[in-house]
Image (tube, rainbow, N blue to C red):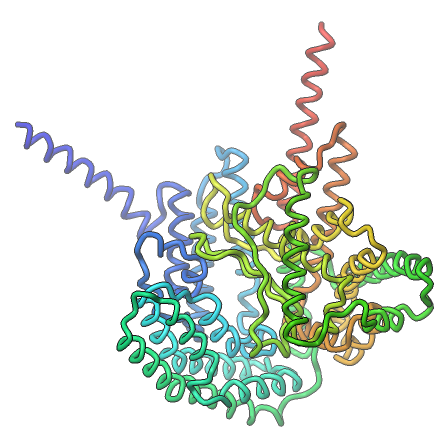
Length: 613
């Protein structure tokens, strides 16, 4: 009887499980939370490189993805776009009327993300898969060196397996390039020249001296449980793969771009594409998460440039410098020996150590501005040398979800003249604390929200916060020295100039040189830095506009809260901004407004109670 009862209970459980599992796996899930989980899991499983970056499966003993690379073929991109459109249909079929504010916000965030993607589907191939900034020819080896972890002999074998798939990866890349060329999406001449130079240098070393090999060899030396014979076998296998797979794949790309070079032009803006203006309108919407037009963005930039330059001139005049030609004065200041580290390996190491010291200092002094803090640590490392020539001056990589590595602030040390000492504080605040690392690590550590809310990025929010972090550090007294203040203002000016030159290039048909000349004249940044930046905006239109637009919105919302909330506490404001994760600016404004209104209602309620009948 007991056995029969247990079997009956088990049957009920199995049936109930099937009732919920079948729709969750194949059809519309009963629960929207199950839908959220399914969307993320189905997406992640198709992107093994993302899974290695996040490291959410490794703690569970799952690494089925760790020997594979992403599919970057045009057909895969089309399937992904169609799949995402279907998810939008399913999402919109859920009734939102009974959702609480947090549930509704999750629905709105995912809907905004999917609608944005759907609107961009008509421009699915309007980019350059091989480019000097973040092209697949550099991100693939960078992934192997900085993301694929080698903690066990199996990890080492997976490293070799992934390298063995470079041929398929780059054949798909080449196919993607050709599809774009058929549509008229051809990179400017300077892009092709840069990537040809980079790829030729990449295949120059003997396989056993290649960065993919030397990195692997050094990691094997750290594995105490790796047998000597297996170590030698793995090294031999990798050397063979570099020679027989990696180099031929790159040479095929080189051959194609050699053929493409004579057909390129110096027309740099996306206005040259079919429907180029519509594409640029979409990129601005995508990156700024606003409906600002290109002309409006341009005018905001001109206004901010004028205001920031006025304050810089005041400081320079007080320090005894000429203020007529601001660009020339700042360029001369950047080159003064007192502001530069030695152009040596020791000098570059000093730069890294100084950045670490700046970060540790501000970490210890943030109590007046923040309740919330990230648990993950951050460190500073040199950008890999094979990609430093055309890479930006710095960037940040978030920590994996399993805590196996800290967040990393990468600094480009190609030239010490690009890193005057008075600029370092601002860059550290932007990339690390309380900027990118602070915001992204807090987002990753959120609880009680769907997983996609912990990782979904919105550029205007993330970059707007990092730029706001620079300003906040200055407000908190971390840049009282007049030269540090100049460094802060230069960084703000740099982001304001971006609004002018990005829209100038892609809407007003400025040439590359026009944009370079404008940025040099108005910021005084080193020419090598300016050139790299302008070339970045050309291959990634609209992205650079997100920084200042995002910061201005955060400042606007902070001022709104300050005016309407007696006893305004900036720490509470930062809680509201950070503890909801990355948001489109329209939804950030909604969240902050709801917070202000809830405080006003609470205050009115207390006032009504205390006043009596």
